[in-house]
Length: 341
Image 1 (cartoon, rainbow, N blue to C red):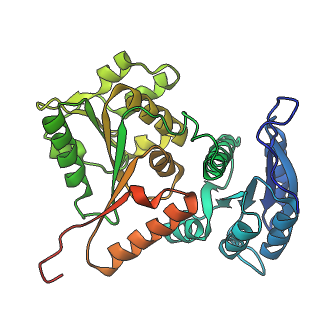
Image 2 (cartoon, rainbow, N blue to C red):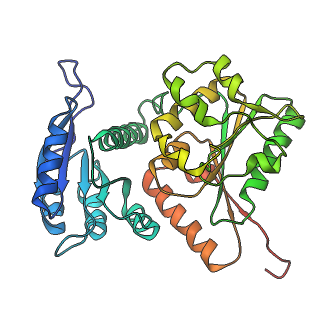
């Protein structure tokens, strides 16, 4: 059975990312072939038109990345992902789909998928970015699991503690916990603390603090390639306690321009400027959320004693295990529980 290529061969140049494309549409497979082959750091090593063929080809070729459609004959993409994850364990599956339903994405992540890209692909920019990020995470975790070097600094900057507060479902008090934790860290330790509202669509961390920020994370987008303390200082909102806050965009539709690469860069920069980052985030399974989770030292998940929240927490545990997030960095807070519960 072939084994995945070493990250850097003897000639000193990195191997291209080896990709298997799976889709029952000839047109989609041809489109993926053209897009992938246009990138100097990627190589299409094969394709498959069904779930069963995908499993066979993945076991045979041992790709770095499998681009997997969801709806296919004989074996759907989610079932195929389960099998590919065991038969090509060093590869990573990215779902390629027109489905935006959260239940499909949860099932895909639970099956072992590490990212997703929506059709149509346009110029391929989002596809390329997702492939590179997923491959980078997968390679870094594989090296770390084998006792090698720690995760690359661009994936896990080592300055400043990073705590992510997640609600298993909405309305469980995750933002209240995030705000109070950030205030407590600031008041008890006198450390430099920043609260990041990473619920980019509907977060209300600033509302909890009675702040009306003049600027938001959106103002950093034009400067993402040259972030420094001066720029961040101009965008950060200041609370009377000395806590700093990076607010979400004022309007939900503005969040579309915040890519996972942007989120990773901003959080990495903040980690170098502050002693502690407290990140209030929505529990989703998109690339932005994965960027947040990759940078965290501790995951605090709020749950409630009812079926929906517990099911969502279980989904998170499965996905976290699949993505290699360490269990000893997870903390669950049972919120809104009566004495009888």
